[in-house]
Length: 133
Image (cartoon, rainbow, N blue to C red; front, side, top):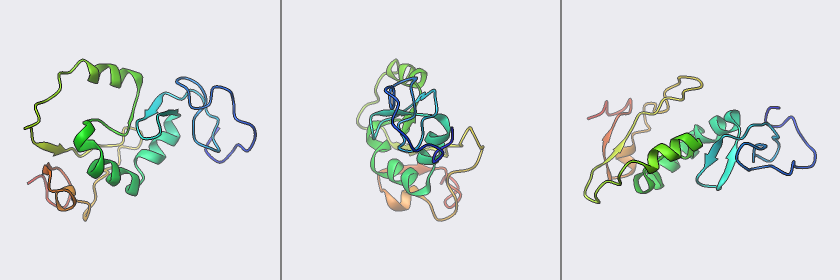
């Protein structure tokens, strides 16, 4: 069931891992993507729409990713794998990656979205504007 196709009572497993998507007008299952901002689980379609919305994505990359070191949404497997990796020293440089949406293979960074211009902590940006310089 796509977002906006449902207007009824919430399922009891809404927003829980493997349950129904946490988005208001969506009841799709399984909810396999954890949102670190809302602390709830979402279906793959809603996760893609929320995470790769231009405003949401830039906000996450500028204000949250440099400090928390992970993407806005992660699967349980991604979180488990990340937790096994040692934390970097505080002196490590912050690198903004050119993420590609695995569902659409669409580039997120377009000309004019250079993170180095927005956040001075980003020292390497792989966007279309600066070309990774």
